[in-house]
Length: 369
Length: 95
Image (cartoon, rainbow over all chains, first blue to last red; front, side):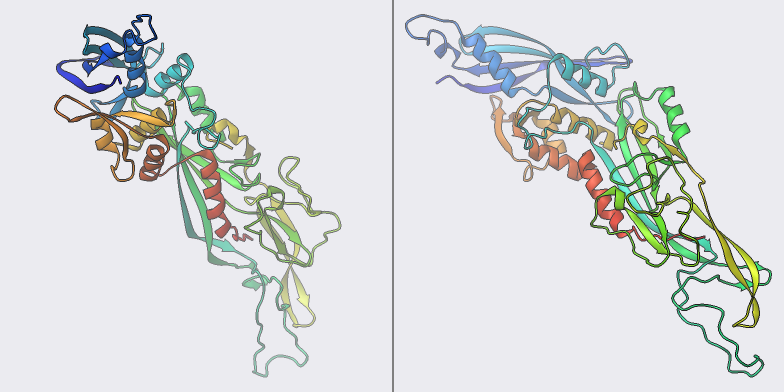
């Protein structure tokens, strides 16, 4: 049976060329084996097919890419772009291979080189690989932060207890100004609502995607600039529209390597106001039409449907308007005499929901959707 | 320094290789992979018996690099974000 017994790298044969936008490496290998056993093996007819066998051996066993250090301290990848095969005798073939960054007609970056190779040589995963899914060639990195930050609120989620003084200066029959288990103004006085600072949970995540230098044109960077500070117009990585804020992106790199660009996002859940129920979004429900918190806020006229903010479509099947998690809720208070409490109290007369961020099409970020 | 950008290039080069295995120069293989986690399926040797090339399972090589450098495919990233975000979906804002 024919077999290659060894593959020897001829160390003295190695040649390296380094240019401004390309690197190439030439190396020779000796293939040692009993190649003569293949010749003449097809029936009675003598056929010289050991050359085919050697070529197939190279296809099946030689790496099609190599790693090469760059001047910046990193690595670049060289790809097999040319080969020369020469028979020396019945037991030795010499293979000369050239690895370089294929001419892509532009920057010569590795990603462009691979794109060219995939296109020209029909490379890529086989249809049946990875359960038919193939392998993604767009690997990204993800990190996330869950933090708490100070924010100001004027209204509580609900009042849990109100106690009346035991001193006798209150007139007889005085009640309490708040309703237990209902929201209440914090620090209400005749002068307004003082409110309080609280820690609020924040969820942010960063996606790092790798671009070829050619993809990072100024037009793309300008697009990033225009989209920074907008919220998602469409579902974005499973988050419903209006809930993800694109904070910005940053990246830097060199011509010979892919450039990592890190995108930063922050998430706040969308919400609706309800006259009666508080129900937080079900984490198990992946339907974006139902990804919102329901916040009880009685005392307002819900018959008009309130106000809708955001682009058409942000209304879900819920009969009440679903608002962007980044909307700002603003209560307008008016001082009114409380006949029960026998005092002047601030009562929320209007609930105003402000849109403070524009909507942006995040598919143009090219990080996925 | 083998940066994430370098790892991304290597991962992509392996991903677009044809077949269920990937052929690697032995030096690259030892620098970037764990022998125990990505064992060679076949080793080509020189006249003195030193390894020249190795053939490794493509899926194992991809998963090793993904884990080492915490890369996600888009589908994995979406799933990961959903899992994490569900725990933080209770941000109630009222200002």
